[in-house]
Length: 74
Image 1 (cartoon, one colour):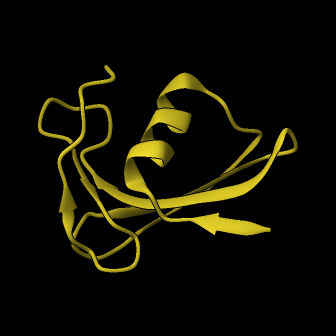
Image 2 (tube, one colour; image 1 turned 180 degrees about the horizontal axis):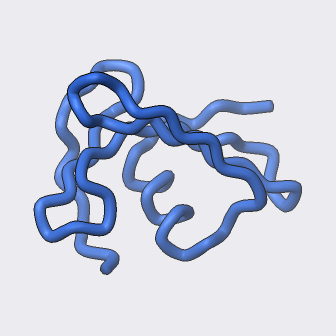
């Protein structure tokens, strides 16, 4: 298993539904860590997000916690 921490690829997989399994855990600051995997590709995608599917959605790098500007996939 290869863990990919590229938030833009992860959020794209989430919003297009290109995954079979999802695990999400919410931290005390309201940021959710999301892990996505699929039987169709060897990678597992991991990223953090606050306000998922909202206009003020923020995506963060899973390792550094750094904010990552993403293109709008709503």
